[in-house]
Image 1: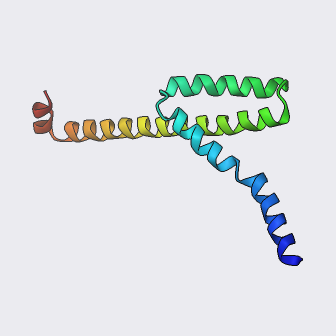
Image 2 (image 1 turned 135 degrees about the vertical axis):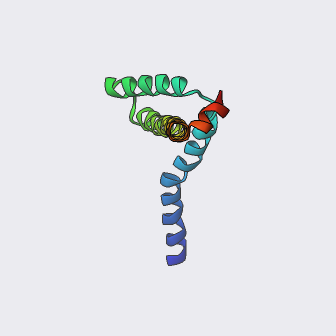
Image 3 (image 1 turned 180 degrees about the vertical axis):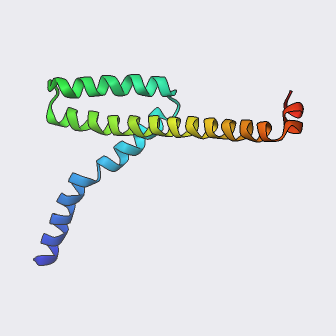
Length: 106
């Protein structure tokens, strides 16, 4: 009897935890093609809906998961933009330190 109990309790635990993982992956795949602006605008809408309190608990959890995925997506876009700016600044500094490089860039 104890082994059956153990399986039943682990199955109950899996039901509570497991659905969030595929949902997160599915959301990430779905929004992977979003531009920064698309993801940001959708995130603003998700926050507005959550703050309204009109959603059920289950809908709120789903919205929260989507919002988290959208926020991570926006962070990746911003990190990429930050990296491009830093690269451009380094290259500009190198050109200003070495005038011969500035002539090559023109």
